[in-house]
Image (cartoon, rainbow, N blue to C red):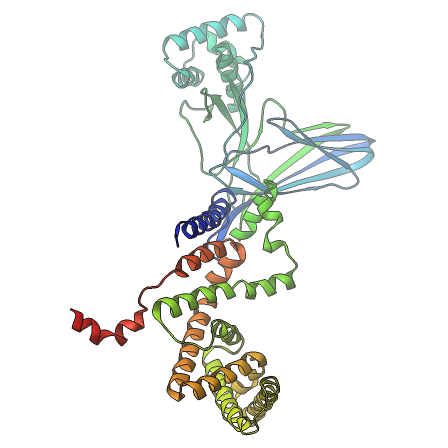
Length: 507
């Protein structure tokens, strides 16, 4: 029979599982390991105004798709004011309004952001708009632009030349005229946009924060954003070099003021920034929500907590099943049944490994002895299993009572062993003992405990439990591997020892 359909099926399953994992890690930022922490910043704007028993309207510019950051959460706080958030392509603003207010009014805006270098400005500039300033400013601008263009070759060099002239400690009369209205960094950035617009280069003024931990009175710094035909670049108005501080958080763009009021006076603004640490998984879930990703909507993490607890155990069963396939089909370990070791391993999660092995040996040993006594009564299969089940319960009870009287806590957890699992193990061992002999029965018993111990050790790893819960699509990859192992017909590892004499003879 051709193996092509098998290889195709396994390949498709593995590709689907791997694609989902890569999407979660790369696009949504899901961590591959548990307890990974992510750095987040909290930025808070607090501003107050005086109102005088009349309608008040307050407008605050908000961050809009800040490059290099993702806004995970936003909160607006005010007392008695209505709130509306207005969004355009490159700007957002919060509008608070009230019909009548008196006294000192306080407004809060808080944003939780996390660095993400993959986030870049996606907007492209529209047609360059040239604002006429009238004479003699127009003549001065034309002269400066002609001189700067003559000494530059492209947009980058033209921008550098414009900024050099703006920051020249001994400017000529044309630049002196433009600087007569102010020499602040914000004013220099506005002059640069006017000069660049005259040279048909798109630019804009952006105001940003240099995020620092514990900053109580952070200051906004103006930056010049220049479009080079494919992307935006930042320049400091006080220099002619490109800048991109690591923690530069662009708040708003354009000539709008940060805060604007109607019906109020005496505004006071306080910007605070501090750094926090969140679990990277929590950050990834928030990012998925912001992106409206269906992965977040159909995630196991969105189920109720009690349901998640159940699936945290159930999703580990395929891990144990895969290990059994390897140990039985490739290594050649003999066990009682196919999946009985996985069930025993799950029991070990409650009793712990050493106590679980001791209790398993005691209960199964006692059960097999009682099972042989029942053989003399010549019972049918179902009554015999029921009788063994009752004897197992009595054996568990006896072990628990004796261990408690002796002060041994190990016996108190014996009741956590599933009765059906112990009953099946006793019945299986008894049948093998009768049909093949005690040696084979003991070998399979030891193999069952060995495989269960290995499965327990792997299934108890926090990284494995985290992986199957956060990335359940990893089971598709396991399924693909099991399908491939299902056609394995070669020698098992332990058979090489069994047939070593024949192998030597052939050589």
